Image 1 (cartoon, rainbow, N blue to C red):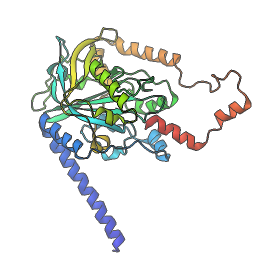
Image 2: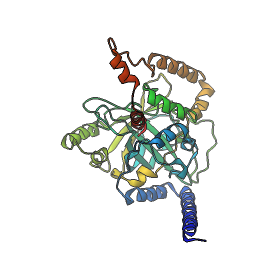
Image 3: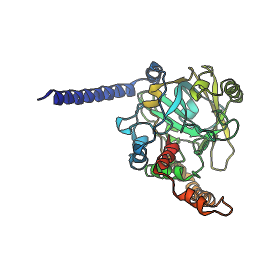
Image 4: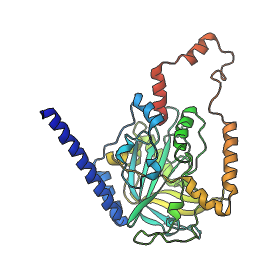
Length: 376
């Protein structure tokens, strides 16, 4: 056996050993208490505070866009990304911190919504790199539980992001776990890829509303009460504070801006809609328990499992089967009123041959940049 082959075998065995070690750590983490999980994961988060990076333009983006298996987003129940997931293409850079959720008011929602969670984790990130036109902020929330997988949900403002003079303020707008369908062709194409796994514009909440014992055993009950939809309303003081921070450091990154927030700051007041048409009810508060930090582990390895809205529909449909039917009708009407594919000459009063050539003869490299801008 030559030295080259020996090195390859050693390298292969080393990789297998690392995978086994990672698997063992994940299994051990799963059986820990919520407090231990939070502590261990945040230790990994703070070990290296350098940020990840947004993906570069290349053919691998097209490969990821159309051929990546996204089932792990729903099926993988670890707090660490699976090796098969590859590089993170969306929400690639963000800030992570430990947090807590407090239940407020006399509401009837069950599970963590009712009990609260002193051991949580949040990651605030941008879906893609910001530009002069927009920023696309979103939050992922993780509730640790004793002896079992965590419960997670995600929320954002819109898939297209936010615009205007204060677009760099992460706390400019309310977030929700339900967002409007995409109105841009690239986002529609990406959404269609996710639709092969689950609804792409809605994240379920029923896992959070399910009750478990202290050892992680589900409490079998027909009384699971889950909100139809959540709204996260940013703390007013924090929103104003962020405008001041951005004014003083206009050229700094999002992670730099977020690092100024106090370790005990209230991020969002949490509101719930019981039905698609009901008024929002104040049910909780999401606050930090450590300062937000940039993190290589947070950007590259930390994982927030998505729950399919189909799980929630099954619960809602027992008493209100019309909700899903009404939503499907509304979605079709919205997409009809906001077509993602429009005539490329619609905004030209009288297109000249030169105008037409500019539209139809885009270089291939621009096509790659286009896809990159959609998903980075």
